Image (cartoon, rainbow, N blue to C red; front, side, top):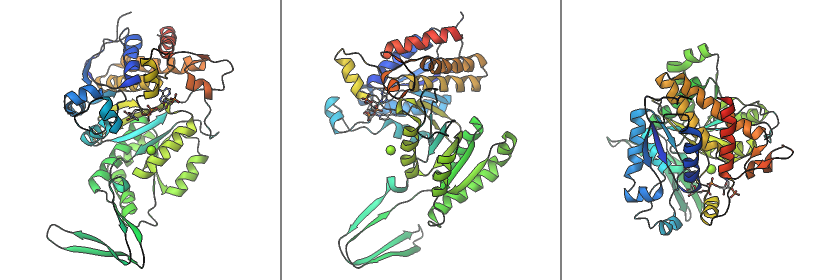
Length: 402
Ligand code: NAP
Ligand code: MG
């Protein structure tokens, strides 16, 4: 068989620990035998980030802006124990944070649905994609513990010196205070990324805040979404027969539970943090969540939602067998390849991505899976495979589909 050709390279961001091992296996077993794989390779493994003083992360993000599509392996976000483990010069920032800041993107997370892995919410028959605003609010807060009685004020000083001043509270005893912010630019970027992704995937978009209580802060989110929708997307939505739906956050939560799924749920930063864990768990398993960062200008970075699966890696280092699920990482590759195919007009490449995804799903539905899936599957006698044998089983299914 002739290999599928590519014209533009994918930006390939290698990563750490168990997912770095899977990365290699996926390329060798599922990609290189079938595709003339073109990538521009960036090693975001922690060792190399440290050697380059994290320049490699910045370079990889800039390459993504240049080429338009990246695929990323999970990476370690350093903490104190990683400092000693990897003899780091500095506690480098989260690569995802750095990349997100450069692409100004929004992260969309969706579960991969498979027969036999039944969501805890019985009527969820289609995936719910969570889009989390990744800037500001409580994540960039300023806090004060008021020691005793006194007046708390909110003050804005304009560049020309004009002041806007509001009393927050007159304390009669000790208390707590918090200042948060967001910017119109960031909210607008978030809105655009959400509408763009809805059009791209042909799904309805839901958005919710608490604008009845927060008449300026949350209301601004609501207004900007409405404005961007009307000015730039309403017509495309009508053409595609999809809907933009705004409601209050508590109403949204109730409706989401009653829904069948199959839409994008845009969330403010905190709501997205909380709801994405709820939704991921309700669909079954973190190892089955995909993730894509979309910039308002339409640049894409695909990855798995899970981390580097450190515990499995340490077993692997000791020579013990691992049963790590590679599906979300494979879907990062297929997402990126399909998008590359779409952008470059190479239909066979997109079709290959579809088939590889189908091969993953069919392999599990046929009863062959990794350990964590076997624990939640309704399959009667699942065959539990190790990390490599699972990938080889997917290859066998793929061969039949091709
Ligand atoms: P994790 O790597 O997602 O793993 C947590 C646990 O979830 C694992 O120990 C494993 O459970 C299970 N799990 C996750 N993915 C799995 C898979 N594909 N197959 C089977 N089981 C899977 O999270 P973590 O242990 O908290 O973090 C490890 C490292 O990843 C950290 O250094 C963190 O900074 C990094 N991280 C990176 C990203 C990213 O790059 N996007 C995201 C999150 C975390 P059992 O051990 O019970 O089998
Ligand atoms: Mg969280």
